[in-house]
Length: 186
Image (cartoon, rainbow, N blue to C red; front, side, top):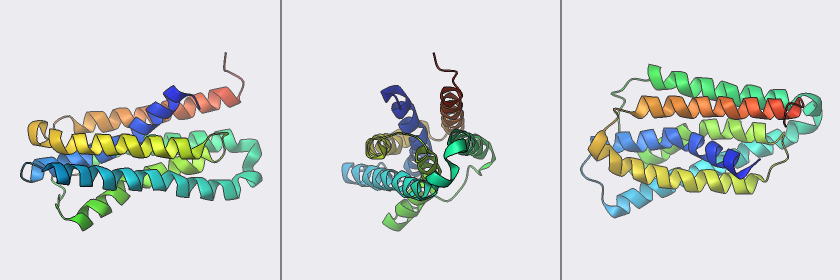
């Protein structure tokens, strides 16, 4: 994967954590620096671990599906991207936003399920999963911290659009993988 693709993937995987953090920022008092860093760290660590878990599961199955791995990667990325885009428009806007540590961890896990599916798809490609997981985790940490702060100022007004764009980006990455494996790369 190119550095650009890794960057797009990291941002795409971080959008839902950004949205969740922004929602958390709109629900409570002005976040302190400690709360901002804690929230970013929780989301970042969880988001870095889940693609590794997915990748390990995918590696275990990769030998059996080597002939169709590019189709699997495309289907998983496209499926996650479509789900992400649709969820942006079907999720209730008034979902509860608790400020506790437990609620933050549960939210981080919930927003990272898509990263696990992406990890499975990455197992079928020749990639350095540690670099990708660290990029996703670091990006998520920054975006979650930023989202928490921005939530106080702009609310969830633009969240659905950002999440939809993240889903479209995942579909595009899946399509590029399929194109490259089918011999369409220049």
